[in-house]
Amino acid sequence: MRKAEGKKESVREILEKREFDTLSPNASFSALTKGRSIAEPKDGLRTEFQRDRDRVIHTNAFRRMKHKTQVFIAPVGDHFVTRLTHTLEVTQIARTIARSLNLNEDLAEAAALGHDVGHTPFGHVGEQVLDSIHPGGFRHNEQSLRTIDVLEKNGKGLNLTYETRQAILHHSKPRGNFMNATDLGFLSLEAQIVRVSDAIAYLAHDIGDAIRAGILDESDLPVEAREILGTRHSQRVDTMVNDVVSASWNAVVSEGVQDQKKPLLAMSAEVNGVVTRLREFMFDHVYMPAGEGMEGRNAREVIEFLYGYFLSNHVEIPERYFASQDSVERVVLDYIAGMTDQFALHSAEGLKPGIGSDVFLGSV
Image (cartoon, rainbow, N blue to C red):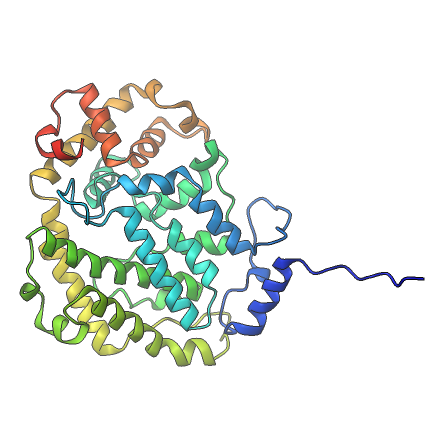
């Protein structure tokens, strides 16, 4: 008689075992996820974090980022960074750091891909306007999680894992020393990677865009930034990524979890100081001025007009935005935050001809 064969392992189970065999003891293991708000059967091929990644990529919110401003509003040229290309650069950097430190690359990738899906049209200008006029304020990291949890799939949400959701929620950083994250030890190392990768990506590509736009010249950058980080995009990214890996290696790869707290990602004191000062330089000379010119003022006018209009005419908002049974103010905020630059401008132009058209003519 033929002997009965045992149950064959699924591809997912093989991948989960591989994580236990190869990743740092401080990594996030997909088999040990805290799970989803709504329990679901396991997938035969993909780990839980791989499923999160795939769900984010196939959302409408992810696709819309290709037409959302990163820093420069309605730039003339094909090579300026958009919210989508920024996200792809963050994801590439996050994967490199995670792989180098033997951490969970799939989790870092999933969170990096989803970290900005809640960003407004017109970049930080749009965020500032909504924050100032909406009673509850506005933070794009919180909106990204709301987009993931509530707005996608016609109000059903994506039902992502706890770990991916936390990394998306906590990716944003205040001004100053963004590596001073002693109060974020509760975050997974993969979530910390997304925070750092976001800053590395936007510092490097925003310098390039500012030079392309004629706002900065390479010689305008702080001398120490040019000497230590390099004078080209690739040099700056490479220096920062290598420094994070080198400074974090001993704590992340070699040591086990202490008192249920993950070790903290690090930079060397020299590079951290230079990056912090460069980041402040960019806020003062690029990010803040970008919202104060004619383009910024017109962007503010468009957002303010749309918010006021839809508060009074919320019946014109697509029905799917009301699926969560939230207040009209919340629905208006969700609707405007989800708009692309072009859709916001076209909507405002259709309701109030001429608004913003002198500045945005090239993007219509």
